[in-house]
Length: 118
Image (cartoon, rainbow, N blue to C red):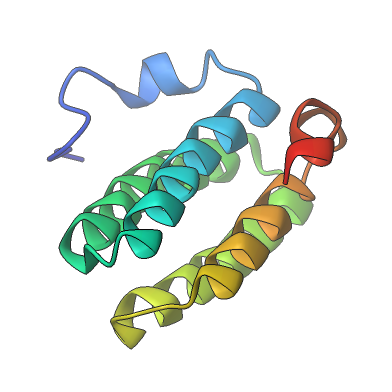
């Protein structure tokens, strides 16, 4: 897979991160999107979503390799929701925050790191 935004990141490097860390890196992009939605710069918000998609695809690949069907199923559901917001064009800040919270809730370790701040 050729990455547009994370050119130095490979699948082999990505799998070295624990699942919670992978989720937090995706969450960083959604958090950046919050800023751009607030500033009404929807082009930058879309770029944040595109970067989140790249990281999601790496996560999906690694989950397929490990055959972790429970996590894979949940991350695929999350991807569908992100895709619907991406296609919507202009999501509300509330929708983006809910999406961020849903992502962090997929893993107890990532939630314990960010749960109080979202």
